[in-house]
Amino acid sequence: MQRELGADAERLQRLQALTDAALAHLTLDDLLDALLLRTRDLLAVDTVAILLLDEATQELVARAAVGIEEEVEAGVRIPVGRGFAGRVAAGKEPVILDDVDHADVLNPILRRKGIKSMVGVPLLVTGDVIGVLHVGSLTPRDFGAIDVELLQLAGDRAAVAIEHARLFEAERGARERMENVQAVTDAALAHLELDELLDVLLPRIRDILDADTCVVLLLDRDAHELVATAAVGLEEEVEAGVRIPMGRGFAGRVAAGRRPIILDDVDRADVLNPILRQKRIKSMVGVPLMAGGEAIGVLHVGSLVHRIFRERDVEVLQLVADRVALAIERAQVYEQALLFDQLKLNFVAIASHELRTPTAAVYGALVTIRSRDLPEEMRDQLIEVAYEQSDRLRRLLEQLLDLSRLDAESISVNPRPIVLQRVLADIVAGAVTGDVPIDVQVSPDLAAVADPLVLERVVSNLLANAVRHGKPPVIVTAEQHDRHLRVAVEDAGAGVPDELRGRLFERFARGDTDRGSGLGLAIARTYAQAHGGDLVYHPLERGARFELIVPQD
Figure 1: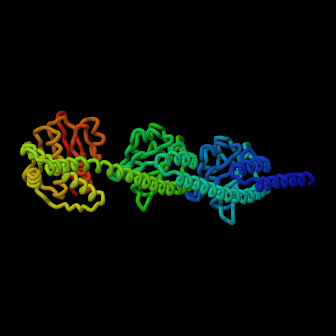
Figure 2: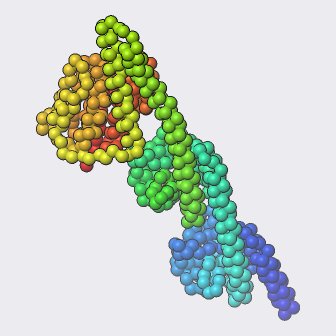
């Protein structure tokens, strides 16, 4: 009798030690480690394991173990109601297995480890199951009522402690998430230039999500593609100029759907960018960058090892992305304002210079004619100079007015059905081409939907360039292809010099020997883009080819 009382007292001391451990630890991992060791000592068993309930999947997940650590390493998941632990959770009452070899156990690790007898109890909080605590013996053992009662007492204390630790970790996690989001917000507010902003933000985002890679892709609205703009850990994506069509691949689906997407296994997923597999990214999560209700890009992070991104990871990434989107929009507005200011300064300076030259020539010729008695031949020459320069001044003022209207978007585009050959023939007839013949090679029955004014402004500028800088023959062609109208003007001259091609469509861009205004192609392309199309240059083996592209919906 005295021996039994001593054993009970010792057990009570061990139970109290377990309770003390439960109250002494706030972090879940530390708590579980302490609880398992104390439970093993309390019941004098060989194995102890705790499985916690994943409410989303209604599965018990091996969370910590002593003696059967493989259960945790393998990420064992047991459906509620099935197997040993599943029956404990479903019934909310203890289950004893006197002979594991002949019992219904779902987890093969239990038999591989040679466990002969087991007892498990539910972990309950306010009547709800949050998990299962089970112990096992490597030799056959008859677990009695006292063993079950002790284990349930231990489980009750463990359940309270686990719930307490979870609440603490949830509160700490929420605080850390807010601190991380605030760190991103502070960085977003501190930088105005886009490149500098992203260089600061991406490493922070990678650290917040404990990821290996972090990438921002921004939307190119004209091309309807996402362009890799900045990256950490995946710099090759930016260096390669990766472009992802909206709706396709991983990032394209995130942007098109305007919702987060998780890829648990990149190797088996639909990813368009080969660099992701080349870099051996295993798991990814991406969220849209939203501004004004529209997707302006995508932010995604990745891991070099297989990882299950949880709902809280997505939540944090989306919170961060919302701040990043605002910062990007702010940086883009700032950069556009700087660019606009610089363009205005350049425009005023260059326009003033361009206007001064013909104005001075006209004024000088007229002053000379008015103030001096000149021979008739010299007088006629000066009148011709004044006429040519005044005509140049007129054309320059018309071009500047065109640009002003286009910049202000005050020119309306009115597409209508037209017969191409007739319209293009009228444009050629009205163009200033001197003695250079223009060959219109367009089928008489080719029809299209386009604004004749846009065609006139673009084609007349292209003809003027071909006559001024190219050589005959000058040919105008047109065709319908891929739901687009394509009108081309080509000549047999020397083509555009290499040093001019990169800035060919910029305002006032011209070669060293060119006496033109440098506005014609800029105006032509702006008109094309106002029509929803574009103007492109194609170098030929001999000559130049400019192509107006107008969509035909």
